[in-house]
Length: 252
Image (cartoon, rainbow, N blue to C red; front, side, top):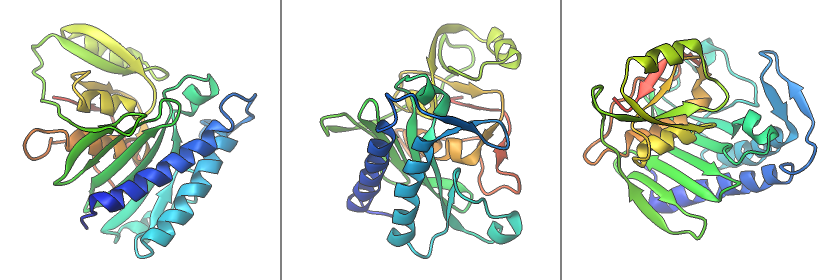
C-alpha cells in the first residue's frame, strides 16, 4: 500500500491531535500507574490512544491496529497479517513524567515485516518526523516548514556521535561503546534517537536492552528512508511471535 502525501498529512494531523491531548497533562501532577511489566502509564498515554486508534480504524477499516495501550492480539490471530498499524500513543513516558520534552507520538504501518510508513511527532517541541517507502524521510518544524532529511551509514572506525537512551543505560551498552571511537554522546528519550540518526545529527543509535515493536517501528521507518538512494538496511523485524526486540544498533 502506497499512501499519497495528502493521506500522510492526515496521519500527521491525527498524531498532532493526540499530542495536543497529552499536553493537557504535561504540566500537572500527573498520576502514574504501573502496568504488568512495571512500566509506567499515565492518563496522557490513554488519551492519545483514544484519539489515534479509532481514527485509524475508520481511516483504513481493513487494516488491523496494534497499540501499546490496547489489547495485543495473540500470535495465532496476527501471524497471517501482511499489513497492520502499530502505535505507541506516548513513547517516552518516563521523560513525560519528568516534564522533559523528548516524548513522542509514534504511528507506523508495517507491511510484510517492515515499516513502510512512520510518523514521529514531538508534542512539546511541535516537531514532526516522517518517513515512507519510495518517498524518503522528512522533518517538519513548528512553523510547518518541511525539508527532506538524509543520513549515511557510518564506519566503525570513524569518530562517532552516538545517540543514547536517557533512561535505559546499561553496563552492556558501556562495554559496547568502549570498543568504539566515541566523539560525543547525545542523550535523548523515546524514538527521537532514530530521528537524530536519520537527520545526520548522530551517527549511530545502539539499544542494548529490551524494547517492543511499537517503541521502534515509526522511528525505524524514518531512519530506513533517510538514505540518499533507496533505503537503509535495519536489523529490526516485525510481527514476531514475541513482539519484544533484542539488542540492536542502527547507523552501521
